[in-house]
Image 1: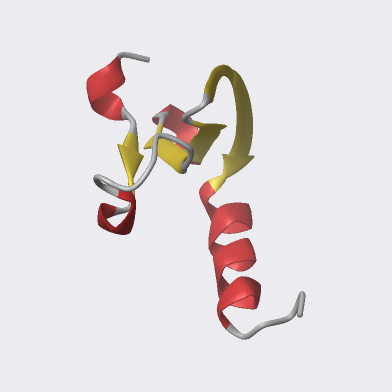
Image 2 (image 1 turned 30 degrees about the horizontal axis):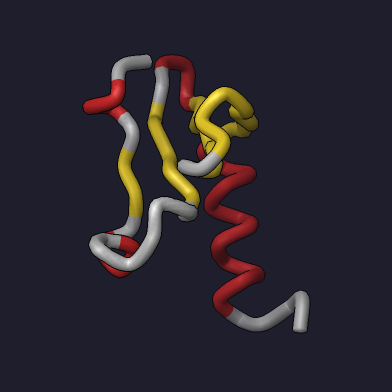
Length: 62
């Protein structure tokens, strides 16, 4: 994927290069990476990522 396809939160702008970036690919898959380690990419389905965001928002992990 090219650099232009990766996105990060606007809250990360200007603060640090260490943030999570996401890119949506074909077939309903999302790619996640740490901007400080761009060579390591985790691939999950859009549904799995949406579920993770949902439980994080309600504080399920403390």
